[in-house]
Image (cartoon, rainbow, N blue to C red; front, side):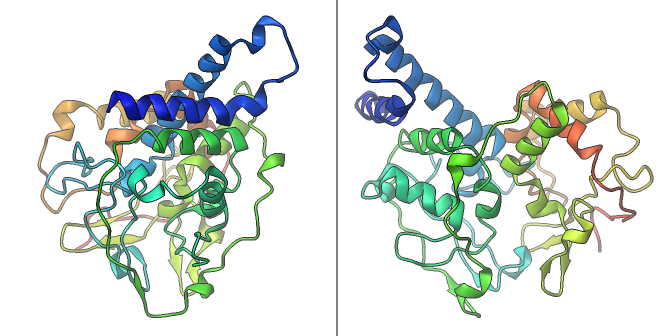
Amino acid sequence: MHARFLLTAVMAATIAVSSFISCNNNQSGTTSENKNDSAKQLLERGEYIATKAAVCIDCHSQRDTTLFSMPVIPGTEGGGAGFAFTKAEAVPGVLWAPNITPYALKDRTDEEIIKTLTTGINTKGDTLFPIMPYHSYGRLTKYDLQAVVAYIRTLKPIERTVPERKFFIPAAMFGPLPAANIENNTMPDPSDKVKYGQYMVTMAACTECHTPMGPQGPDFSKVFSGGFVFDNAVLKVAVPNITPDSATGIGSWSEETFVNKFRANATPEVLQTKPGRRNTFMPWSMYGKMKEEDLRAIYAYLRTVKPIVNKVEKYPE
């Protein structure tokens, strides 16, 4: 990262967190040193969310489709997806994840970016296709959203313009959300593993892939039961059932089994394998580096959802 740009980003983040610090308090807690510490914490939180929990960088970068879980190609972070999302991803047309580096966002305010993240309406007034999980992001805390914006402003500017999207139906049919009242969103106490795990599942947008598709879109009566099939030139793979059904889901998994699955699939050795078409869209290289307490909380929450019998063949013919 260029030192000059990082300095600019830290200054921006300092401004972003200033609302959390009283300007009228003359105690030591308002010194510039403490403000810089707050800005640093904001950036660290944003990096964690964008690269390990919500994994914004996964969709908005180019990925090496030859390697296991298609990890991000170094140097392309945030510059826009290198391949199109089409009917293979249930898109009624074709779209590319846009460039979110400072090159593309330099004229947008933090408030405009957060509005797009939480309502699905961009600055042009266009409705985003919900492969961008704005339905989930609208439930995150204002601090976490500000952290993500602060972090992506530190990315290396990439001068790349992705192609315009092309839909077969009006974008308004995707159901944009009204302005999210993020001021009321709160972070559950991590000691309440189930509620905190639900927050982390929302952040990671697990429902986006692990909910089967019905005639009118995602069938939320069968949430987390999997079954959707990604079928394109790179691979053909079905999304697994992660409900606590013992026979077809993860009901027989222990907490350790769950955590170890993430850790094992994020090792350098596994990430360097070349599985061919028996690959996965699951970004293990990022999710596998989540904090252990966050993974354990996700497991705790998933144990509370409705068990659904749905046997999924991972690699259907």
